[in-house]
Image (cartoon, rainbow, N blue to C red; front, side, top):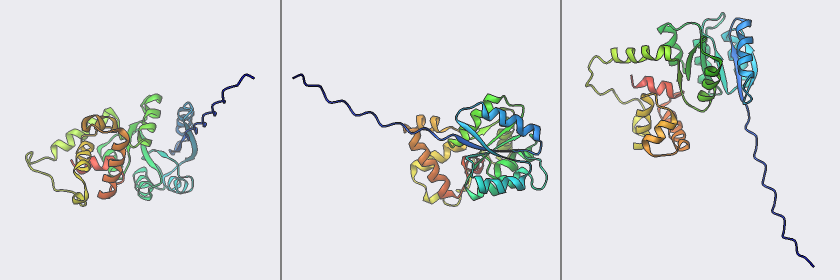
Length: 229
């Protein structure tokens, strides 16, 4: 009798990655429709809601807990900066600002409120979806059009170039490696670049970033960078 080799067990199915959920916030219905079309072109993203003002954005973010809120700034009831501050402070969602306005007050206000990125509405659709993925993964995204202004503002604030900035509250809680990661965040480096520089994996970088932010009481890596300017 011919013996048949035992059949190998079928490999366990790989769980499908959940789509990135997005809440679109803008006071113009046409803009919201356009942004929905941009997001819907990506199979790995899903629009879970739309809001026409900052107050509605806060309410919907609490109810829906989207991964990323795509936030306009100038809106009725509550502006995007205040809405960002509340949403980020509650810790359920990341905020990516997408606006027509790039004045310094709007830019720095949004970043200090905890936004993980700042893009202009003139950005190409591919740039918007790429930015949504990056902030969802914990990176920061700043529009090239405004990056130079951030650098200039940081340099102008350094009245004594040789001076060492005061250590932020919680600095003493950081390990030596976490301090290295904190310094890299100040340079605006991505997790991948930080990993290459320090000789550690990208996953390990994410762990260190999370611990740095927690120990220093910061909402995201943008605030960590601004703390060093």
